Image (cartoon, rainbow, N blue to C red; front, side):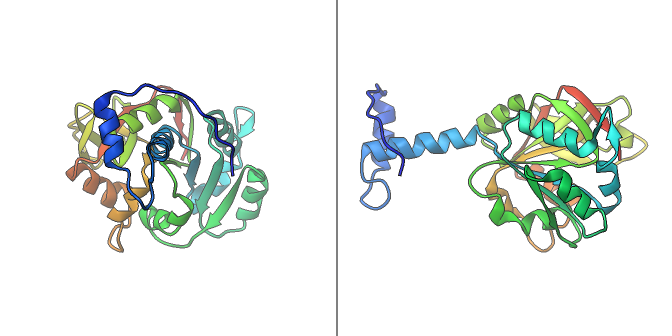
Length: 249
């Protein structure tokens, strides 16, 4: 058990009353314990330590190709480690490429093989590994180097179930577009010949673990099934990303 250090702090009376209101005889038996609990909980909201890289079977070879002097997978690992991600899970399907991906990942992450249709269902099947705080999900076929810290801060401050990374594109018809009301995502538009918005999905997301309450057996795809649910319930915000981004798929 870690040692404790005594400190003195000054709190507003209103805040102290809120703390005292949560003290009970079961889980939080004192002011000190309550303050420690809520401080730890608040800190976890600003920390993202787990990441999932979603890789389709047809893109496994792509991750092992050299791009700008390193494999695409090595670029992913460098990006995640730079942003203090401690646990990396690469989600994909079984194939002869998996052993090579595992060698490239060790000891920084691991491969999980799941032959289940749909990105939302795949995530649901590893939900026990994603408890304890918000987690990152990213597409494996993109090369990016962005300020993830700003996206994490926005995610924590908004207190929504999900945050989606966004970009502006001159031809959103090639991507499908995202409709915003300020930062709130209110709709998604599939690829079409006309565009209502020049804002598009960048393929990088932050989720709270509570997101799994919205995933059932009918929720197959993140983009087609889960995201419209989040938009309808006003539980997703957008965060524009800035920096290097290339879609290589």
